[in-house]
Length: 292
Ligand code: GRG
Image (cartoon, rainbow, N blue to C red; front, top):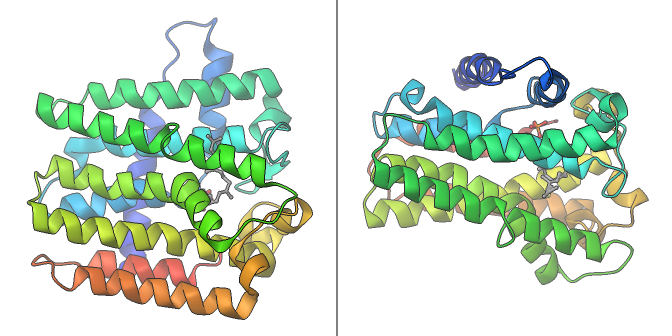
C-alpha cells in the first residue's frame, strides 16, 4: 500500500512539475530546456512527498498547494545541479543521466540552478489557496532552510571540510545544513499551511530532524554499498574526495546501527501525535531500507 502511495504521489508531482516551466520567448528556450532537463529526470521526489503527506494528515488537498510542492523539488534540483559542477563535486552522472553541465556546459548549468531556485519562490508566491500570512511564513521558512543558515551554509562547510578530518559533531552540523534543513522545511511547510498547533508542530519537527539525519546516514552508507545502477551516479565519491562521512568516522556496521537508532527516534517522535501518521511512519522505514 505504501509503495502505491509513493508511486501515485510521485506521478502527481511529476505531472505538476511538467506543467510549470514555460519559456516566455524563444530566446530563453535553451535556459528552460536546461532547467527542465534536470527537473524532469526522475529522482525520488521525497521532499514534496513529505510535504504532501503532512498536508493530507490535516485533510488538506495537495493539488491546492502544488506550487509549494513543486518549489521544494525545484530547490532540491538546483542544489544537485550546482553540487555536480566541476567547482564542487565534479560529477558526470546524476539520476542515471549525464549531469547538467556535461550536457549544457558550466555557464548554462549555473544559470539553470539559479533559475530553478528563484522560480521556486515565484511559484510559492503565486499560490492562491494559502492565505497571505501563510505564504509569507512558508516562503520565509523555505528561504531560511535553503540559504546561508541552512543548505548553502552546510554546503560551504562541506567544501571547506574536504581532505581534512572533521569530528562527528561537526559532521552533524554539516548534515543539518546540507541535507537536514530542506527536509525540515518540507515538513514545516505542511504544518504552516495547515495552521498546526504548537504541540503538533514540536513533535513533527523532532520527527523531521530525525528523518533528515536518517536520510543522510543512509546516503553515506549507500555511497559505499550501492551500485551505479541503483544510485544513478558513480558510488564511492565520498571516499574519492576524502570526505568525512558516518561510514568513514564510525565504520559501516556502526553507521547502520546509528541509522536504525535514529529511525526509532523518528517513530518515537510521532507517538504523541493525535493524527493518522501511518504514511509518515512508513517513510521512516522506506528511508532505512532504500537502495537509491
Ligand atoms: C549547491 C547550495 C548547494 C547545495 C548542495 C543537496 C546538496 C547540497 C548536495 C547534494 C550532494 C549530496 C549527495 C547530498 C547528500 C544527500 C542528498 C541531498 C542526496 C540527493 O538527494 P535524493 O536522494 O536525490 O533525494 P533524488 O535524485 O532522489 O532526488
